[in-house]
Length: 395
Image (cartoon, rainbow, N blue to C red; front, top):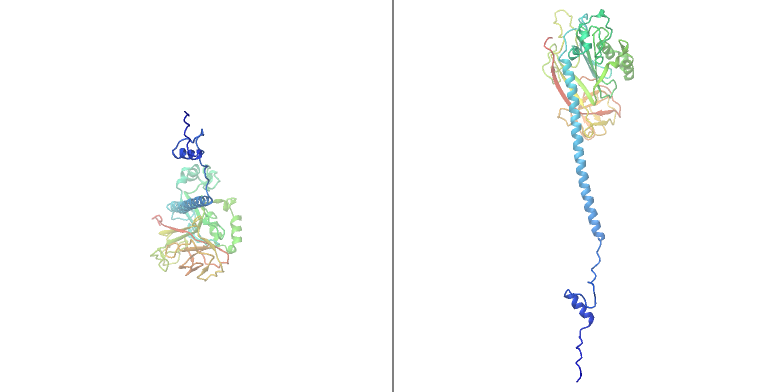
């Protein structure tokens, strides 16, 4: 009897392997699982899309940061202009609150100037007056100057900075002067104080400098101021800077003698010059020593990105009412109350503004002198600040 032979599978080995794999079983004859698929990288299209998205996000972030920075710089510029105006207004108002209606020195004549507003050689206003000692009296210099006598050996004048020295007798008064920087396009406002007031003192020397016909040349005027001396010291060393970026400084006066009725310009408007001299004509009352009040106007040139500055594109004769400039960007709008430009010390109000022209110009505003301007001259604008100061009642 023959033995039974094992039944051979009719399934091909490779087919069996595939069957096992399909059912999640190890393939026959293999001791390890099947190898997985290799990882796939980014395609060029995917990389380009990713880079584009990143670039767009970067542009958005940069734009946002630039906008925030510009807002910050704008706010800083406005704040600086406001701080400059408040500092100047406060200092001048404190000085004017102590103005005295008397000659500059006790033995002065009736025509001695102790309150003076006049044009400097550059056609801008100078403000000078005599005032009483205030906080200065708290210093050693102020105390000694107030109680001393000319014959007691004190030989130094008070100049505002030598507060610990013993000064000669002041008679209780100070001379104070405010002027703009003695250059045609200067933007610094300066102040000087000196005591005791005297003939040939601070006010007298500055008045002579302003009125000297030899100072019609700007270079000559600057040289004369630098060469002038007071008390053996250079006159210009008496001045210290109050503020920078001052495009214009103007003083308008309420004059009862000329029957001022309004702060607006015109026949009944304020005056822009003052000389504290008594009228000696028979039959006429004396002129008041002091104006009833004055209005301070300050035009502050702002920093970037708000700075309004350009240049003339053509000569501007004295009587011309149009200014042709490189650009009028950032200059105040007409009707804003700040529609002023300054060229070489002259302040000009404008009534219209186009891309490259200021029209309807009113020359010589804020007490300045109209003058001819050359092409290329700097044209400066800014924010306008005003304050009315009532002077002491004792007039």
